[in-house]
Amino acid sequence: MLKVLFKGLNRWLGVFTLIFSAFFAFYAIPNWVYSPSNIRNIVLSPTFWPYVLAGILAFSGVALIITKQTPSTDQDTPAPAIGGMRPYMRLVILAIIMGSTMYLLPRLGMVWTTMLTFVATAFFFGTRYPKAAVVSAILVPLILYAFFAHVAGVAIPQGNFVRLP
Image (cartoon, rainbow, N blue to C red; front, top):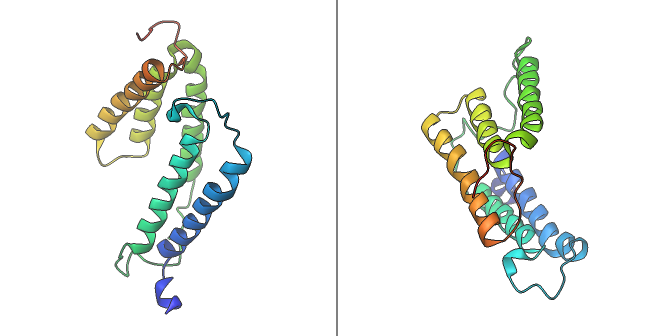
């Protein structure tokens, strides 16, 4: 019974994901994340977002366990590695994107730099949904900025050239 239940890489990943989620939720967050008792807004509590991430991790683990896969995609052996210089060039280009991100952060600010980095990474890795990538690259940083700057009252680093309200 257990051999059939845990057949396949995704099932094992799901089990380990659930174990890590339980470790974070029941041991790591209560013991290692300090939360003062006088915080009125739960969203501003230092333990809120780690618990949200642990919940998302648990949900992902359950989804990995219960998903049914076809035998062609449920293999325990990894795909053959791509040879030549291509993997190293991808690593170098990704390092350039990361370096550019660090260079642009103080100049453009976090929101605009995140937009550019998201688009560059999405198109570098060859997304199947370029329109969704561009829309996400614009909307997600703006929505996060609006939440943190206007709802949570957290200062988001602004650039030297363009400032958001």
